[in-house]
Amino acid sequence: MAKVSPLMILPPVIFAAFAGLAISGMMRDNPDELPSTFVGQQAPAVPVEAVQGTTQLTDANLRAGDVTIVNFWASWCPPCRAEHPNLLDLQAQGYRIAGVNFRDQQDQASQYLTDYEDPFFATGFDLRGRVAIDWGVTAPPETFIVDGDGTVLFRFVGPLVGSDYEQRFLPELAKALQ
Image (cartoon, rainbow, N blue to C red):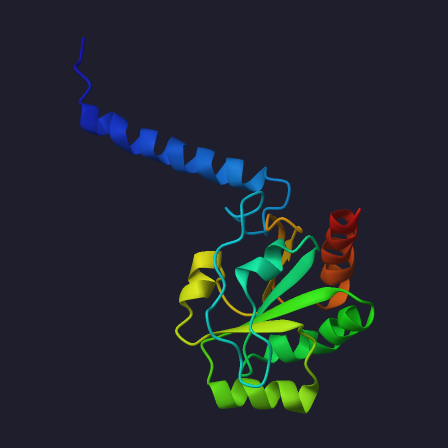
């Protein structure tokens, strides 16, 4: 009987492991959605500085008893500009929206809110993007729905526009308010 070297078995085992990972990834409910480790957890800290000319966002704002939409944005971000009318519409409907500006310049962020209207009841300014990293933000815009006790209920990656916004974000917002 011929002896089988362990090195001959190793490549098929590695291939099978990678194939198993790929198949399990495709079997998720929404394979295109990035999972968030914060859903169901307390919201991370917010920046200690506000965008100039706006009210400072605080951790207490996220635990004040009301559902809050937390939107990470930047003045240099085209998708952020695309979603801005929907943020203004949500504000006009009475939703609490907090804005966290990151990797931006104070004067540009402030000017953006002056030029395009400010949909936020309070803001945070995250010059280096450290707070965004703590929240797990990969790129602007990203939006979180936070329960009145500070629990992150939902994470939406990308601009709040189109059918994805209507079919995924708005139902989650309605569910959070029930």
